[in-house]
Amino acid sequence: MESLQDMWQAVCNYSVENLNVNEGALKLWFSPISLKSFDGQTVVLSVNNEFLFPIIKKKYSETINKAFNEVVGFEVEIEFILEQIKEEDLEENSAKNKMSSRTVGDNFDNFVVGKSNNYAYAAAKKVAEEPGKSYNPLFIYGKPGLGKTHLLKAIENEMRKNNPQANIVYITSENFTNDLVYYIRIKNTEEFHNKYRNVDALLVDDIQFIAGKEQTEEEFFHTFNTLTEYGKQIVLTSDRPPNEIQILQERLKQRFEWGLMADIQPPDFETRVAIIKNKADQYSFELPDEIAEFLASELKNNVRQLESAVKKIKSICTLNNVKPNPEIAKDAIKELTSYSQPVSVINAKIIENVGNTYGVSVENIMSDKRDKNIKDARQISMYIMREITGASLEDIGKYFGGKTHSTVKHSIDIIRNRMDNEFQFKKTVEDIIKNVQDF
Image 1 (cartoon, rainbow, N blue to C red):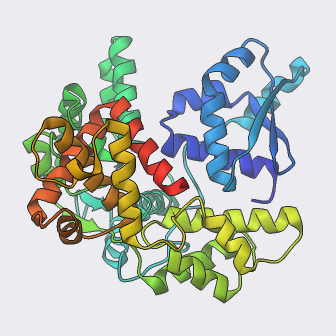
Image 2: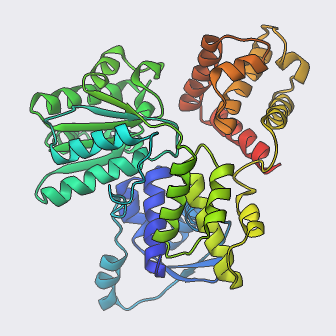
Image 3: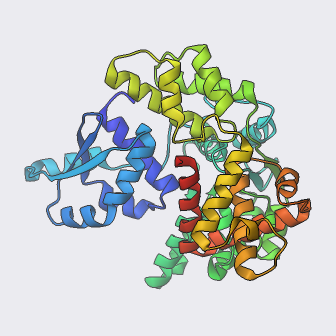
């Protein structure tokens, strides 16, 4: 990022893509904000609207702070100031600060291809070059942080480059639902239909989150049918294949499987090194090979972690005017991984944290007891082990005394389903994960 404006754009993009800030909220609440200064610790944000100033501070302070932490790779403090500007400058400032929900930086050229993602990459390129002709829908799935959104954005940008007049809509499933609620509230679903059924391509991120939302599923079903009937391209991403989205309507599962399904797996060592070097180049940061290889050996399951580590190392080096070294690298990733600890130790910490949270002893979690609270704690432990260590279903089953592959998978699916539908439960599980990683 070369300027404060670039940094603020990155924060806005992250808020849209990861924190459920929809396009309407972005235009209304983020456009009056500009980034005035950043000293490596405190971010000063200027708001040019006196009426909106207290609302922005109250409603979006936490969201903006979280987005900044992710963008720069470390925790910062946020300070808001009210800027009194001349009336004749309002229009100019509004135009300057108006942010797009599209990340123009994600393209096929800066997507690092390896064995784990080459099939999904090739399918995405084919769809971008020949929308509506090859694979419709294209369904890309894989665990969070592996590059699904990057491919979706790359498809969007390639389509726009090839056909600037095309009507292409990229949206998260959460914002699709938010839009539907809005148009229902103003009693104008016809406009909602026009917005999503008269497009050349519909790209939906995290489609699994429509599961269980009956009216959203109904609208998406008819939108899907309309677009495919007229040969318009649909691309969907998910953290799991359609048949594993537990409470999704069967008719939607079947349609999602009509075209091509392409999975993305965690990258191998060589691909992780290439990703790290690629990210460093994007940030104009010279990272020694031994540091890149160290990061690749420690961060194995998540591309976002690799990017976050590079950003944090660069920030540490820039602020302290030093060159990257192994100690800085170790410090940068200590919040991302349980550094130098074997999987058995991490698993023990997971069981202990789950037990403490839910009042269940380690012995009971590891037992075959079927009491609901014990069973719940055991299933949560299995889910967290999968998320943190990336262990296979078989290995997790062995850890719990020989549980079968299907038993572990069923347990993980139950927890995923609950997290999709129970906000407080999701927050509790995420807090446990954070506690384990921060220990």
